[in-house]
Amino acid sequence: MVAAASCVVLAGGLTGLLTAGGGEHGGERVATAPAPSLAVAPEPSSPAATPPSRAPSPRTTAPAPSRAAPASRTPAAGPSALPGAPTSPAGPDGDGKSAGSGKGTGTGAGAGRLFRFPDSQVADWVDDHPADPRADAIEDGIARRPAAVWFADHSPGTITARVAAVTRAAARADAVPVLVAYDVPGRDCGGASQGGAPDLAAYDDWITRFARGLGGGENIVILEPDAIAQSGCLPAADRAARFASLERAARVLKAAGPRTRVYFDAGHSGWLEPDRAAALLRQAGAARAGDGIFTNVSHFHRTADETAYARAVLDALDGPPGLGAVVDTSRNGNGAPPGGAWCDPAGRALGTPPTLRTGQARIDAYLWVKLPGESDGCTAAPGTFSPEAAYALVRG
Image 1 (cartoon, rainbow, N blue to C red):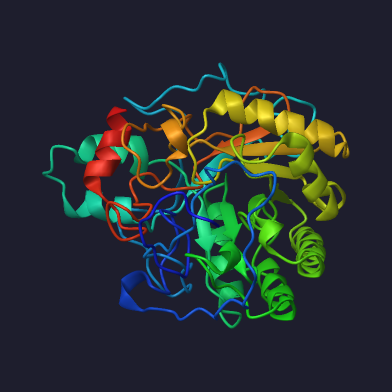
Image 2 (image 1 turned 90 degrees about the vertical axis):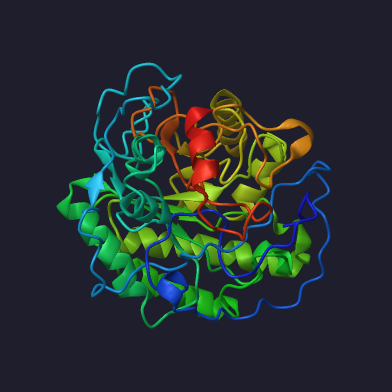
């Protein structure tokens, strides 16, 4: 993605994301396949201040099953309310109807609890700094919250086991995991987070192996952030091929995980116009193969703006009535900073706590896809956890 700031970020994963161990985590660096060379051109409908490049996190892969979780971080679903945490502007929780109801109650993604994977930098920091005066606030505000688990390296030999390690732990906790597939070839238009599978055939194979780890429980899959909204850098034929692969991916994921819901990339309210986003999503098969769209991943736009945008995109998409949206609310408590700043901007705050019960029509979930407290790449190396940044977000 064309960056709106001059800071240099690395390649290989996503900035500031909760990922499970393995890969670069624990010092075992995993080389990612180089992205194919692509002619980069800005998306005509995108504003001048484009969303951030997706830089790597120190945790870019999910764990092999043999890796033991920290003793004090057993898998658990995040509580619906924590002392000192921001309150949801959505009002009361949804009515707890069964998953996939899609009837405008905000419960389409599941009626249970979101899963908190125990392996994260923020949890490790809290464990390692019990006497720090900020530790309690960071633990209550961030570490105890459920967040997404990213799969951002091309590792077909281990991806099934690593996905299964998360989904099985979530099933034991009677909770719903959020899994992010981030391996599409040419991701980030060959920019800061270039990488992914070497070609679409390899990606199709990786997704098939990913799907084998889903099992029969409820899952939410965030399918390839930026792969649609940022696709203007691709030649028309390559864009069509990518979109066809994304549609295949959604079908494979849902066939392997019968209770899995798959969401497609719609950018965010400060990027694409709803009609433009819907046109791209339609080409990518989102209305045919998916369960809805996701918005605001790693960004700061207010929940109200994102829900309005998501509904406008869904209206323009004109898909089946059950399609919904999920919104990343992890750092949007104070809204987007002036001028489109995206890279570690000051003055941000935690947003709506993660929940599957939004109480909002066609909004299936508020999720913390980007893990608060990890750098975007300007104040520290991309993905580096900063207690100062985390504490600032908690305090707002």
